[in-house]
Image 1: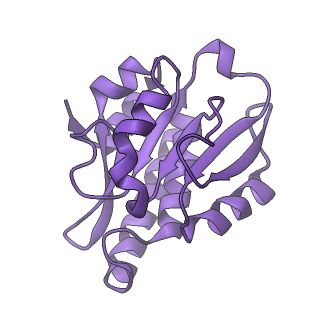
Image 2 (image 1 turned 180 degrees about the horizontal axis):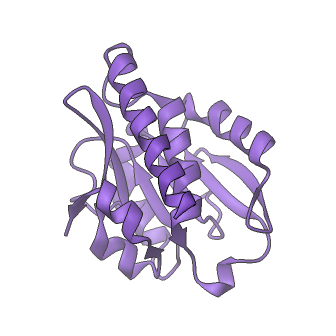
Length: 178
């Protein structure tokens, strides 16, 4: 119960922060807020047992200001459960690592979403995007700016297909896309 309250307070804070800062960033870019959301995703999404050992890999395809933010997260938080957080940046879909728990597709690389989905077909990767309409095109989570605040859409069909168990607390905060 305490963790739910902490999560809700964190999200409320993010909403206020995002509302104040969103004008400065536009649709693809409050990366500190995105990073905090991503950290919370690690706590409120459960990966299959085969993904609960070894490194916890967060991949980013393309160049983005989120890379140093995520590296900072990995330096301060260090682990998810017992897994060491590792941040990997990829230049192309072909160079990606199939062992990613999450793959962040930058707005500039969104044209490659279908190839990313194909690359991770049959794997339990949470595909995260940052461009309007991409949850409907098959990303698991898509960041959107609504009414001056950062929100996220969740494609339940895609998270289910990836074998990810999303907590009810996180589902309640999302705009669900089927």
